[in-house]
Image (cartoon, rainbow, N blue to C red; front, side):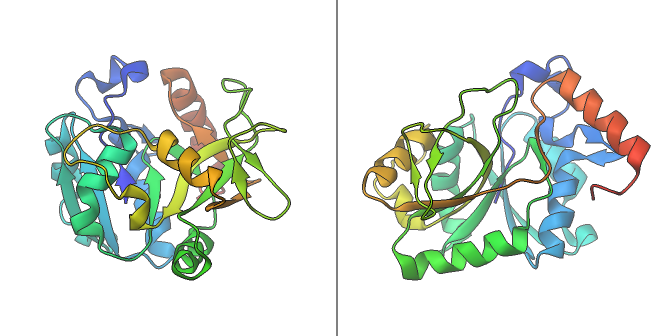
Length: 230
């Protein structure tokens, strides 16, 4: 699943007429970078949610055939936050663990390995597997602690930042009403308290493309270096 329902307030006025995942870097929309990388990792069935200007996403991407994938759309009348959006899309995602990618990050993570981590969730009792990254300058305190056994905790000793890429078991969302806004953090923290969230430290390329300045910086870099980061 690619999360694409956010309003993109920090990106205004760029997002007044264009949904944030359709903003271009390196000559193509952010969300297309994700689709191409997911396809290269073996994903052919994608779910994308949307709210703000969602029709523009559907118009641009269609059913996904042009990218070698099949897209199922999960529209939201108003953005349901991360957990609420995933809960609303569960009928499209099915009963098996699945991978979720934030539509507004740029990352060179090994998505095939994340797919394999999703498959392991059925056997190891974990409810989630998260990718964590070094804390960026705009988020210096981080989010979660990764211990030496691969378990993630919500105490910081020290903390890394959640990359917005993870694998989840559908059971993590049990009990959430639908449709209703719900944040992912409280669900993850509850699962951490019982030792059911695993993860890894991604040390490669990752950018939270959350402001016009970071978007422009990434665009300049990609146009200068060509496909080195593809």
